[in-house]
Image: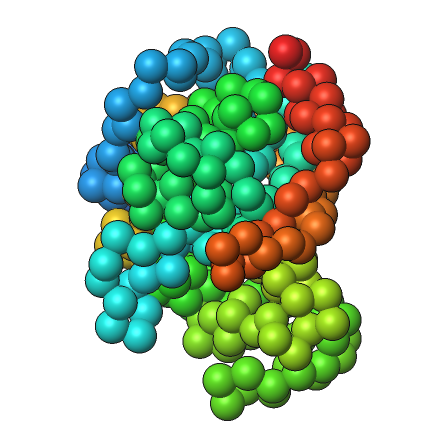
Length: 310
């Protein structure tokens, strides 16, 4: 009996050792995958990082979950062979408030007539990027909205196309049937790949709302990409997302900043309030501009200031 008991014990130890070895291999595999993901993301973010030289910037403590703002710039280069500095044909400001779990996305008409800070002139707001890059755009938008602009993210047209493809396309509710660049966009819920998304974002001449209609579509695509990227489906395709970012995106957010935002601010991105600044068209020296109503501008400024605890 003692011998049989000893054999059972030895057999049990052998099974236990096999189980432990299998568990160790699984743990090492998981750790290895997580480590690879960590360093892949870190390396990609490092390649997109581009600081800005500003006198009136502020330091946001992401570890304390302070609210922050970020200027989103869609640059009209990178597609159709365009490689010049370009202009920021898409300009949105996002304020993110983790305490209220809320974000606000404000679209600024690209032809808005403003003081271009650092260039000593008045011009269309999207020309600030052509004159002085992200830094001048941030300073100009900061003065226009009377809020601090803490960070920026710029992406060119090729990047938008690749990013949409990286998340296997996006779904939006389309409220205007039209054709653009050989693509047909039906009324209702539609699914678009990257090339189709570019056409969807470009069209404005057939839109009864003109550039304002295009800005609505831009916000829809941005929100759809964010939702898809934060989903499990988006996470499994991280390598494609990173590739799209590396070649076509610039930001002054570090990897540590992005990690904190991803971990601690996630809830704020599930509740996005969208605002559209409206302008009145006018001509000056043969050039068309938009002037935003002062009362409307003040209302938006106060909304954003409240979110940023200003």
